[in-house]
Length: 251
Length: 244
Image (cartoon, rainbow over all chains, first blue to last red; front, top):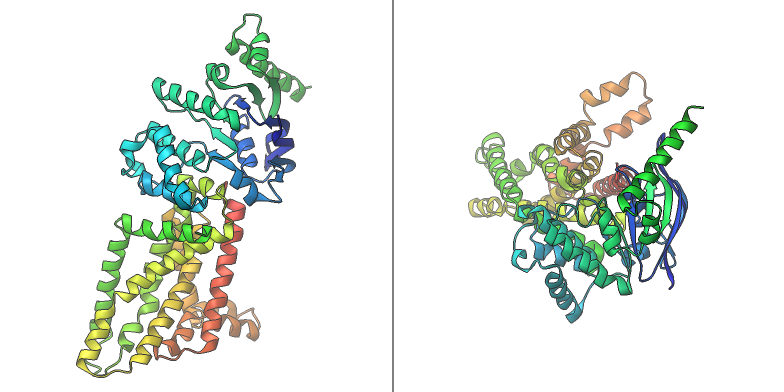
């Protein structure tokens, strides 16, 4: 499988704070990569650098062969991105918002309306299409955010906490959707829900305090725990590193 | 459809889906009326021109333009939609210009709705309509200057209120930069050349000939340079602060 996203020793510091420290990984076509880690671990920051919203302090990101700093527009064209919290223009209706995205993404001709209808159908937002986004529930806002991200059928999907705030049924739907789309895309999702990794991801990465601590399949992750429990494995990996940091910090 | 135009279209229509547009237009028309007829003494001067109407435009714009521009970028940063916008295949320059032109077009709509003023003066006498047209164009260009300042300032803060207040203060300094209250600050230490330069920044000076219907190429160059400068700074500010 061809490599779609290439992240090489990516680093980001905000003043004295090192949010991401030398993270490297590849994402292949057809893969669903799960980003795990405690809050503030640097997951969102890494995603923001891949999508070109943040500039890395050092390191490179390549998407479909384009360097995100040299060809930001080409990279942004091939990515569909759901930012954390699914921001959208609240005063717009779902319909006008999706039309705006279609405009900016330069979808034209008969394909345009067809694609909008298709996405509205897949994401199941038909009955709220004429409502303004600010009047929608959290779950629907999130769905509009996902609709916006997949509208141009991108080859790379970056979803920051796509199931956050959804009820169990909606979570199930979104997971199925991600699985269905995974065949012809490279997908990166971040999540707090560990069962989700097992359910949808073909690979998982754990980041804590800006460092990459684990990179492997969910099965390998579970194998890290002697109890065969993914949560236990996660705690084992993320807390032991915190202990090490503490030790090195206080010699 | 080019990305710049898509941004423009979205921004422009967004004015009209909220009450902002209507409130603004009503207040603008109401105030231009009051200034023209009461303070400008339109009837008493007994002249068939719109000088009393245009005379107060810099002062109306001082408060009303920052009210339009304050949300341009502050809102985008506060609600987080800037992350959406900046990860769409749009350059920052396109986004800045698109949003700016939308706000400017909106101002043009408000200005165009003062047409009853023009009808009134044509009904009462026979004014020189080319002078009136030139003044309208000049007023719109000046509004563009105020807007460029406001747009740039709104990129600096997430708070619309802060954006409004700072924009008013900076616009005020630009209006009065030819006057003692601004020049006195520089008088004691700056060389005469600097003082002259600052004095030449005054919106009022540049608007004086415009409101008489004379569009001087120097005034147009001045406002264009001002707009380009502030929009350029706007782009730089967004680049630096988009994620903070």
